Length: 84
Image (cartoon, rainbow, N blue to C red):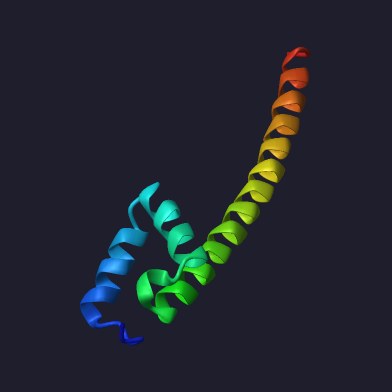
């Protein structure tokens, strides 16, 4: 197969990569397999998966910090309400 992907193949790849749940399965298949016969698709899938993991980790850390801050704020607000 030719190593160059056409515009239509890229559009289909991006469309499938934007569908929740389907994207993870297809990206893993393309990343560990032969990329459907395209080196560019395999490399794109590997980069996209790395990017997704980084974003999930950052979101988790941010959520933990924000949640802890909200819990402390709620606890201090609840304690101050006892004295009203």
